[in-house]
Amino acid sequence: MNCQDTQNLLDAYGDGELDLVSTLAVERHLQECPGCTKRQQNHHALHEALQEPALYFKAPTHLQKRLRGTPREGIHDVPRYRFWSWRGASIATASACAALLLWVLIALPSRPAADDVLTQEVVSSHIRSLMANHLTDVPSSDQHTVKPWFDGKLDFAPPVTDLTQQGFPLVGERLDYLGNRSVAALVYQRRQHVINLFIWPATDLADSGTKMMTRQGYNVIRWTQAGMSFWLVSDVNLSELQQLADVVQHPS
Ligand SMILES: [Zn+2]
Image (cartoon, rainbow, N blue to C red):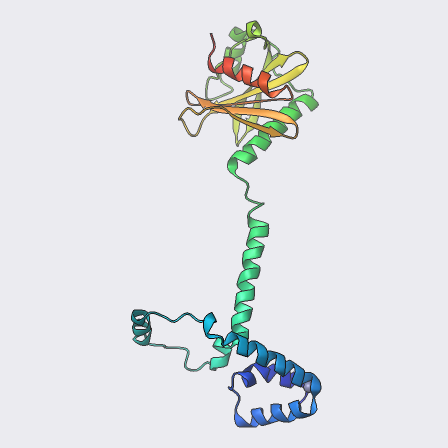
């Protein structure tokens, strides 16, 4: 018997599950091979450690009774050590840990909240509108021009208000596409800053307070009001953006 054969049998040998011929063959090899003897001693030490009574939970009496009453079909023909050798148990535990770790590493970061995805889309859309020279489809601050323009392009009527009096002139509007639907984008200006206000029908109709976020250096404020989702995004500072949110929420 060579080292490989011996090592393959060490688990079963340690568990006392080998037949007489194999046991003798393993013992003969161990007598003349220090390497395998060392391995066998390590196995033995680990085996002993796993026998510690502190590691075992004694099943309550009612559970023991129930298990004894359960027929154990289908496992009589499988060698016992294959099923529940200490090595099998440790491999199973290691596999479970590895699977859990994988899940934590892969599943969690790849499943951001739907809100996060939408926030990212809103910010990307804002950046695109500035880069692609496509800030507005209709450069107009006249809400009587803007409202009809959206008719027939959207399946809802976004509330359009010019807020020049409040320091936020409406400079135009365009159609955009966010969260798998067409949305209205109203473009406001504050000094040299561009502010996009995205509006679309809310999935959750209940009014909500404002939520503020910052992504890639852009400030975002969102809220739900009268069945519509409102998303403001700009590089203007947060307090001025909040000021705009206030006047959009409470037009005088
Ligand atoms: Zn050997």
